[in-house]
Length: 73
Length: 223
Ligand SMILES: [Zn+2]
Image 1 (cartoon, each protein chain N blue to C red):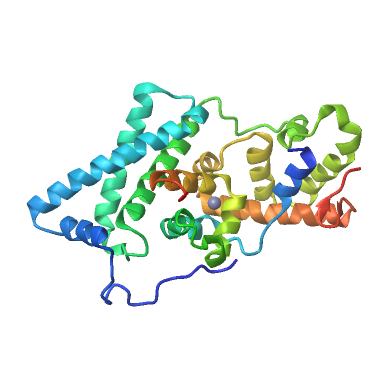
Image 2 (cartoon, rainbow over the protein chains, first blue to last red):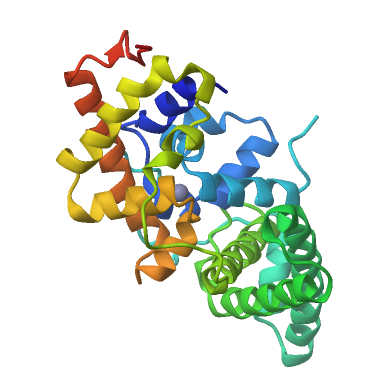
């Protein structure tokens, strides 16, 4: 990714972003919706926004997704 | 910030409907001593398996291997088990029991990884090297003429518009590349608080760049 796109991504903030605490508290619910392709982002746009912007939380999300067997094919 | 869905109040009193497997887990973990023991043992086995694959998944970034890695997995599984058995009453059946339980072990691994970096003397918290800023965002040194003014404006915005705490956190995370969880430990804070401080800082920096004509059509502009 070029510097401009990366800087743009870094500076962009989504007002729906719920923050780490809220996202982690619902991670078990969110991850099952993702694994079942059941509209996770539509139901929890604030968590989706957070996971797009927060490295450590998205890393935890990836770990939990792998733990429950990854996304359904 | 938007509020996510929360279960209605009084959920602990209402009869919650769990799927069969989750129901079995909760019943066994609250059952007779023999039943409980067996369930705890089985759960520990599952948690350890998850912890091991999680430390393996993260190991390329960790710089630790072998016995130390396995030790971290064992500790995470043991601590997660304690947390799960203490908080079993919080399980609402919003997900499968195992998904709820695995969240504890993943978060334990995550926290232990943060502490691992914290003890690493290679982690630099002090000092600020602004020369590293272009590289942090992947700007090509060969095209410096295109980004020099933009990054100078960004640095000015960091120094002029951020609070002292926001500035300190920007320097640690962006310039020094300290992992967020490690920084939280160092500052006696937590991930959520650091993230929110940085969230506000990012918004202010973007507004400052926009005010100075560095944002066009909602994108950071090339010089
Ligand atoms: Zn987060």
